[in-house]
Each structure stands twice: as structure tokens, then as C-alpha cells.
Length: 295
Image (cartoon, rainbow, N blue to C red; front, side):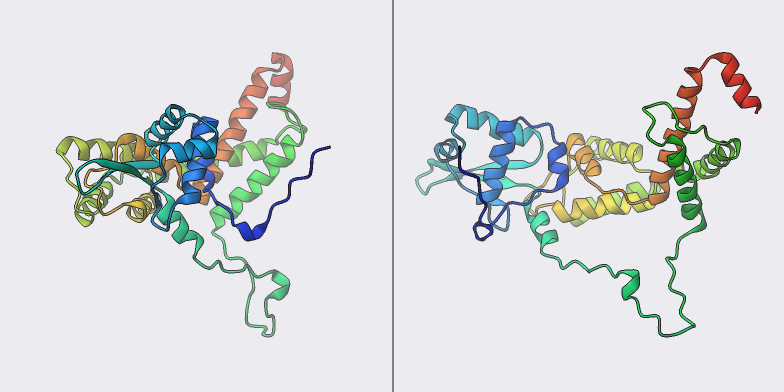
């Protein structure tokens, strides 16, 4: 019987952002990224040779070189040739792109959440309630009704059919918020991206600038989301980067952002429930569906 594996906390650990697990990397490339993060300094840089990496991974130099190329294409790794005094190449310098900003975020102290029983209730004038906008509170009630209606039924069935009132309220909520989601913030996108280029002294051609702004216009619909992506780009941007982000890098940066608009996320979930109901109606016999709609 093999011995049970035990982990010693004193040996440390390597923490990855959850978004790294969404990257389409082969197992060898992911293991290589873990090894590079394990050896990286606070700036995300390390200088191992291909032989050293191959020994750690149990792979050939050619295989490790392929893993490095895959990580570069994924936008999580940069390499730079290091030269000796006589001009000969020494070793590659590996830089894990997200490591510096990620370590900085991990080092920030987190505020402990206070449970309701721990809140002081010594005065009658203080109202200890979770302040929430009426829209968000209303959406939560609608979502709860939909969740109870779905129950444990397999998609697209329902445990109990949604009431007509629930359908009408859901459609009204989606319709009332539709114009707000389609606000045109192109002027803000142009201004923020130009400030980003100027602040980081980036040399961007007209075509590069136009391509980045087009991607941002397609993906960003609110000012809150725009501020989040610009803050993220400024936090990960390195001083020696002189070119603007490529379309692939920009799209990945946007996907790495956590949801910043609870109302928008709830509206998407309400739309998915309505779509499920439409699919469920189409799977029913016409007489039964008509009788239910009439009722």
C-alpha cells in the first residue's frame, strides 16, 4: 500500500488567479507555468535554463521549448534574451505577466465581514438594514420565484409552471432596463484609452488605436465596466512595454474582470429563465400549452 501524501505548510505554496484555469493550456504548459511562478521573484522574473526546467518537469528540452511558446501565445509569459559581456547569449529571462500585480493584490489586508449578531444595536435611532436599490431587491425576488419554479427539474423542464404574473413582471423588468444597457459611451472609451496611452508612453499607430477602441466598444457597455478594465490595464502594464495591447490580450484582460454590475448579471439570468420557458413551451403538445396559457 503506497504511503499517504502529506503536505508541509512550511514549504510554502503557489497561488494562482482563478482566471488562469480558464486558459486553454495543455497539462505540460500549465505545469511549466507553475514551475516558473514557483521560481519567480516579486517582479515575476526568473532565469532557469531549458535543462533545469526539463529536469523539474521530466520532459525534453524540445518539449519544454514548446510549452514556453504556448505560454507566450496565451499572453501570460514574456521572454527576453540575456547577453554576456562578450556578446554571446546567456539565458532567457522569463517574466510571468500577471505575477507582480497578483502578488500585490494578495498582500493587501482583507476586511473581515461582520455577522449580524456582531453588530452593535445599542441605539434605537440606528437602522441596521442592508441598503439596496429597489431594482436589485425586486430582481432578487423574481429570481427566487424562478428558482422555486425550476426546482430540481432537468433542463428545460419546470417543477411548477411559472405564474402569469411572474412572466409579466420579468418581461417588464427586462424591457425597463434595456435602454440603460445600450448607452453609447464611445466618447468615454476614446478619452480613457487616450489617457492610458499617454500615461504609459505607448507608441500606438492609428490602426492599433482604432482596433483597441473597437474591441472596447463591442465589449464595454457601462461606465463602471470601462473604469474597471482601464484600472486593470494600468495595474498590469509594465514600464518597458512600448506597444499597445493586442486584440487577443485585450479580450483576455476583459474576460479576467470579475462581474462589476449586479443588476446586469441578474437581468441576464432573468433572460435565461424566460428563454428556458419558451423552449419548454415548444416541447409541449399544442393543446396543453394553449390550455395553460389560457388559464
